Image: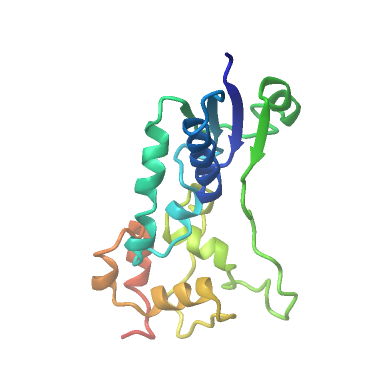
Length: 193
């Protein structure tokens, strides 16, 4: 019997949980075989677990061990550096696979539409988090942290992560997996001194 061949676009938590669920369902059914191909625009998997979780939260990042188990399954294949719409078209995926799951997540922040949002020095949380986690799409960002003040708008998890990174001693941050360029910039934060 030919396996049910599924493409998953995106390799973050939702993509990996979908892959694990498909493989588990096939394990518990005698008449179902499945093969999973995961396509990711970055060279590395795990999406926001890799680039969106604050570096001082290693426990949360440990979910990647579960993803590694899925990736080791012989019915699973990972293809990095593949951009749907550029390297392969959505219509091609629909033709080649029995099913396509799009697990691409949110790619940008929502504009707040407040005065000053576009001024120099204003940076969206997704950009700042991507920058301090060394996400390749944000490597050109270089927020100036030597100013005398920072304002974080919001009080959700990401806003609190940003605020905590800004006020944490660089010696403490050095014990995390924060990007080297971000650690160096955090050493210049004047309001912490």
